[in-house]
Length: 102
Image (cartoon, rainbow, N blue to C red; front, side, top):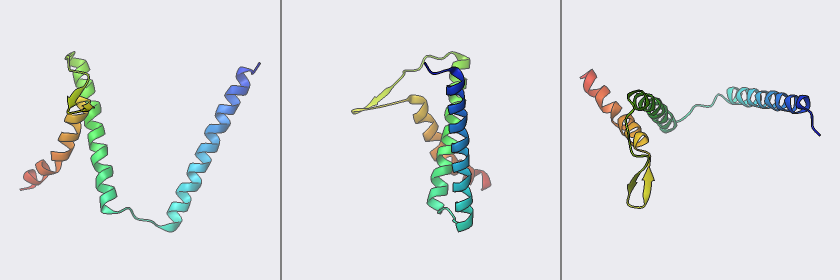
């Protein structure tokens, strides 16, 4: 029978090994002095904004105790309504920023 200490030690060893590998990877990337493309940066920003909006919408819906459908079906594709709203707002966010700057 495996003891709790063996499992705990194995998990800590695995976490340490993972962190060490990530640090080595980051150091190698810094040595190459790579730059991400504007497309990659734009996609990263879009996903980040949409993720933040999604979390905010989930908190708002749960706080207000709103009943929303779990899935929306468009043709044969089922989508989460909050995710659709979040990605839609993230897509139009640059337009509002452009209007705001004038």
